[in-house]
Length: 146
Image (cartoon, rainbow, N blue to C red; front, side, top):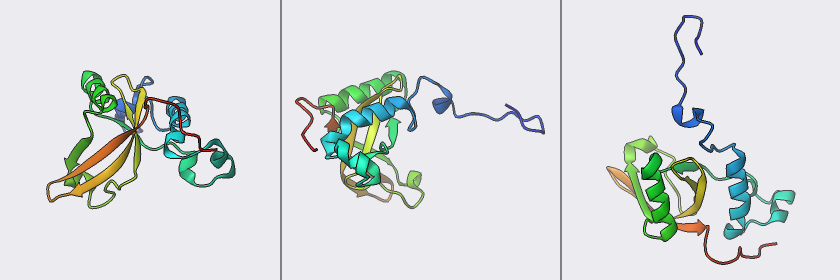
């Protein structure tokens, strides 16, 4: 696509690929519908609108691309990866993760594979460390919430 001056606009390759699930994607919505009972959101809550998080899926991301993202998801699902960190500058002075935040982790092909919840945040001068727990999928049935 080009503008009137003939310059070409560059699209974000990550989200330009149809294979990668994005926050408005049906794959994310379906994953959230299956996972939300594990955080206490039931079917009735979405109908009566108890809180917006009932219906709107949490943000999604991947740890890198391809094999790197697949390895991270495998470790998260096995329970051997429970922490991450990012440079403090990446947060632009605000919007740090908070305890209780939810996120959907994508694999290397862009499919939603895990729902994680932040359990601890340790902001530092150079980096922000975050500890999380796997919420879904887990062994056993979805807890009853309705």
